[in-house]
Image (cartoon, rainbow, N blue to C red):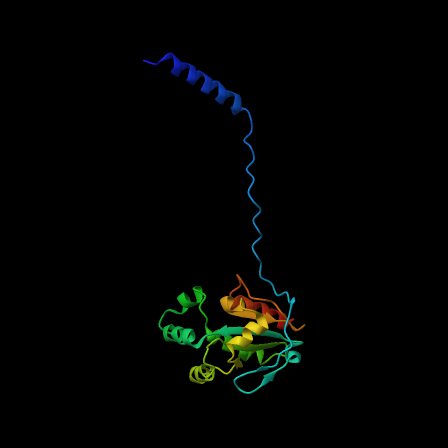
Length: 197
């Protein structure tokens, strides 16, 4: 059996609900969410005026980047050796889908770039021991130019490039900055399309 106070409360609750049912719900406002950065080949960041010596002894000067698109690739020999150990054992697609570096792709792009006037490659080895890069390159059979100086990549393109592993220097001598969503294959495809124009 219901008490009188309970009945009064229920009636009041029903009336309050009826009065609000005809009103549209109040809009919910969320704080502004910044847009997701999109990748593109925009070249806006000036390169510092530095000379860069690669492992073969070639000195790269600021003018060597002008008029060409330069793929800059950063790798670490310990990681590259680990990847090499898994390649060819049925793990290739898994490694690529996980975004791990595949220096074979850099070498293939370098071979193509040598046939054009608008493309070039410059890799940086981020090992603390500068002797590892030439040893690894010789052992792996890669001959694209590599700079064994982990401090210089930070000076040239900033620390963000370590996380994405690659950037592009445009023909105006400015950097694209690191890529957040484009894979290395996508960047290579875009560069090859530009070179073909």
